[in-house]
Image (cartoon, rainbow, N blue to C red; front, top):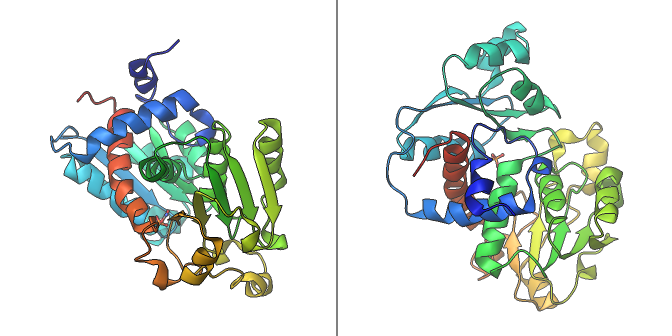
Length: 312
Ligand code: CP
């Protein structure tokens, strides 16, 4: 049986591309350790440089990684917009990574294409972190989602968790749902018909024996639901704008809706939100979407430190 130290050691010099590559033991060990970063102030990443390559827009992921690196004494090079990089002149991703690896110790990449982070990892000897690749994966968002769920509900098993909104294109949902198959929970998958969870993910839930229901109606979720995870309808992923127009206002959760369910629920959203969570929920005691963003800093400090093999 592996120890917690073994589980954490296994992160060193590794890539973080997909939650499929991370075991339940590693997740639990990671979350235990991440708590220590809430109060850690030593510059354990002094002298380390993060290469931060964003080929798609971001506020939370990019800025929290930059803040995490700088607050632990490290520094950041990179770009927030591919138009100001040599990608605009036609440079391949492989070549960009081969060049950037000379300037940093670890690479963070967000890209609109599924599989781009894996390709980046195959192009370099440095650890690579996937900051979101198309509709595929967003592993550090999943770690901060799990961190927030555990902090608010005290556990990651025996929960009723509802996912509401765009289950087809949301990478944060895909990453988190796959990871939850390691745990024992009941899931409610609520979406418009055209935005149902893709068959691959449903197959995985079936294979792993995860209990779930699919429905279009928000009020189909259990009255004793523990967590509601809502997502934005991902306009930028729709091939046909007409299809987006049909579903863009599919759900708008407000205080009245939560009170009608009657549960003491934790409300999560990876953000940014449009109108799917009403601002009248911002002071609801269970609303934890801004806590998620704050926890992102703690979790990303831990991810950077572990992947860089830093002892603390
Ligand atoms: N949740 C999330 O990934 O937010 P950003 O797109 O702002 O990074």
